[in-house]
Image (cartoon, rainbow, N blue to C red):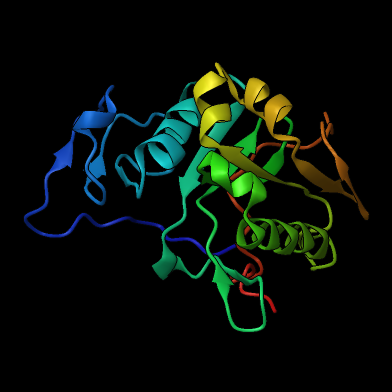
Length: 198
C-alpha cells in the first residue's frame, strides 16, 4: 500500500486547531486533533466531503486507525484509459477490514465520472486479494456522500447509508464484511504502490 512514515508540514505553515464550522475551514492547511489518524495533523480539500468524514472516522468506536491519502503518495488507479483516480482515505476497522474511502458531494450519485471511479475502486478491491501478502485481508470500498456524512453519527451509520462493497477471500459483495479472526494492523506494505494499477 502506498504510504509514508512521516507527513511533513511545510516550513512556515501553521497547524490549525480542530474546527466546528464550515466558515472556519480553509482548503490545504493542516489541522490537528486526530487521535486515530496515523499522523497528528492532516490537510483536506473540502469541509463537508473530507474534513467531516475524517472527524467521523476519528470518533467512531469501530475504526482503529485511518490515513488521509495525498496525491504525491501514489495511491491511485486508472478509471479510464488516461484518467487517474486518487481516493481520499484508507481506514482499518476493528474487524480487520481495510477500507478505501472517498468523500464526495451528493451530486456524485448521478455523475458518470464518480461512478466510473467507483467501478475502478471496486475492481482494485477484487484485485488486491490476488496479490501475495494481501489474500488474507478483507478489503472494502465506500463512497461517502456529503449528505450521508452529515446525517451519520458513526462509521456504522455511514456504512448503512453508503452501500459499500467489500471482498474477503475471492468474493466481492455488499457489506457488512465480518472476519472476527482478523487482526487490526497498519496497512500492509508488501506491494508498495499497490493502488497504482491499470
